Length: 222
Image 1 (cartoon, rainbow, N blue to C red):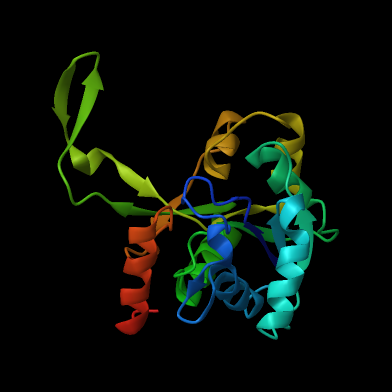
Image 2 (cartoon, helix red, strand yellow):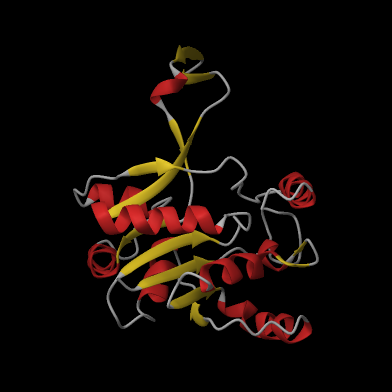
């Protein structure tokens, strides 16, 4: 079965506190985004990267600077995550399984990528998750209540679905906001299949995350 990937790199650096989008910042000597492209390219027929329109020229310049020649297609980000992902999906004309991945998770391993594809091909979809290690509480106004952490999971990407089915659902809910594709598919009535994720598949949202990612690289965990 064909395997495709859409890597969503829609950040502009505002939350990170940087004039440069976090996907362009250096991790182990090269831009964050390039790490994910390289890994998915070794396992996928086509890799699509979704970028904000204002940074298309910057990405071309970065690719020239780092002599980055790994094949990938570019889609322009939309006004919301759902529209951005749909723009990426529409770049793929064939059918198969597609993995949607956050560019801010450059430490994803090829083993996890292959796992979500393999599981998705058998069950229709696959979403990686990890168990919580900290105690958690639920807020209710000014009060809080302890809950069983074993009842909860932290959700990661890549999230893998049938390409034709995901396109159909995105078109139905085009423009609506969702934090991830699993939430969207669940709204459509599709049961989500969870698989074990990886604790070092961290999401880079701040400078401490970037420093943590550097440490993991130095320890050769990825």
